[in-house]
Length: 161
Ligand code: DQA
Image (tube, rainbow, N blue to C red; front, side, top):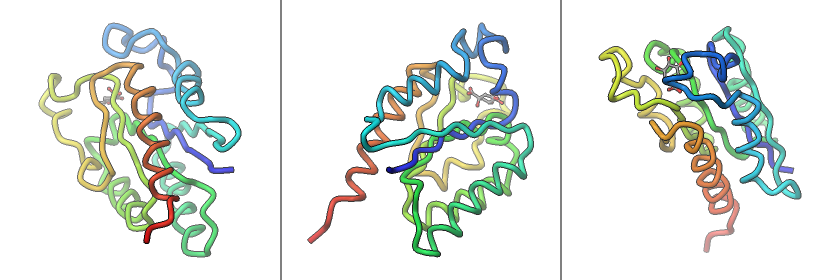
């Protein structure tokens, strides 16, 4: 089984109730189901990690890196909406840079179009160290990101010659 992690940063546990004019009506569970729909159950297991505590997310990412170097890579890819940490966290960026070096694909997702919002949301600390991003497509962005991630994982696992 290949594990796919959906990582949600602060305040995303309240999606569906939180500023629905910006973030829409779908709950975190709805978004998880969208991801699961794109990941064939015979091959993939999708796990949601949501935390309001940055250290918890760093611990999860550190463990993925540790497992990788121990020759054990259960996680094939990561979808991450880091919420406000996107704009603030050097620590998250550094953790994701380590994940990048393992070759595990990481897709950054934002429900809202951060480029069209307040200036402080324009910069992403993590964008330079992830594989790519889906921004501003609302819940549909989760479907698109999951589909892309499965393709990236399949490409990674194809033998090269
Ligand atoms: C967000 C955008 C961030 O600026 C904000 O802090 C969030 C949600 C989005 O999905 O649009 O918490 O990541």
